[in-house]
Image (cartoon, rainbow, N blue to C red; front, side, top):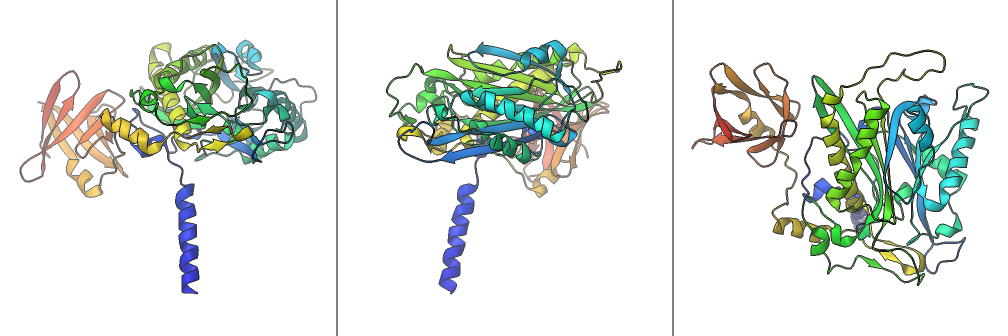
Length: 480
């Protein structure tokens, strides 16, 4: 009996370990910026995401039967319980070899009135029809007798692994994605619409990330979700390192059939959804969407001819802005205050794409075609060779307590280090506090201001002062 229990425990333990999917930061990949609680688009309050993942069959492709490697992703800007609750939005296309329905009305009206759905290229019509039927069945328009709407449905092509001409996405899968929509931590990799996708030579899929930024006295969140299916292996760049070229000797795919294809290396698509709680108007959200390609470029995207690179950004602020009968007051950030949101968007897109690749698992699809996952161990070794390996630092409370206190930068000019829950902050005189992110045992970054702080120890291992690195070095003595 004991032997049976031990065996069962080991099996369950193995399954638990196997099911723990890594994210990019878990591998020691360094990213700049401060994330939200979940480092996900759902860090923007109210945003919900749901998936329907369809994985069936193996072997030779039999059109209409499989194998199937596809799905549906649903994103609700204010959550599905809100029903009809439009948000300010706008969109942008880097390269238009793809589809996102409903965007002409988003541009014309300035509002996104529907959830955003993402699937494979050949299932856009099915998903759009299913969403319309769901509106009728659930009274999405809250009792309005006559309404019109243009569902926003985007796609990327998964025909390398999926029986895409078998049209396997059905209404039930759309309803499943909608039903599963929720906030909090969300799955990444081979899930939802991203199930059968490839990226930069390896397995791709769904990824997400977020950033918290300060504008004046306010704190805002920018969240990103990607369905990533683009790029050539040779261009894969992680944390500034040419990982793709370094991994050219690593097998990344098997292509058995069909024997002929117009797909060229680097072709594919990426759909990017950017959400924020910052009060932005549609023209400002267009500017946000236009910054998405900078994040894609950081990881190796080039907007190739065969790629559909389409992005949409929305703001959950100004909840009462939409009205059919009345003029409504709204607030917005000044254009001169918006740059931190641009930076957060670029950072979030870059990390979301790499999160998708790190979370994705090797997948075999039609005709034995196979897309291999990004090799974690080999990637870490490459980062180490380029001195870009930076494991996440979790410092013991006892050490953090040593850093707390008051430091004199100049007469009547002080930096105070204090703790809130498990995080430490710096405040200079009565200015806004700034969070310190640990880089090593005694080195911290303040991303908001581009400052590095190094705590200095004396011979007795007590903190004697600190150095602030920004446009040179400024030292401060600990006085309390």
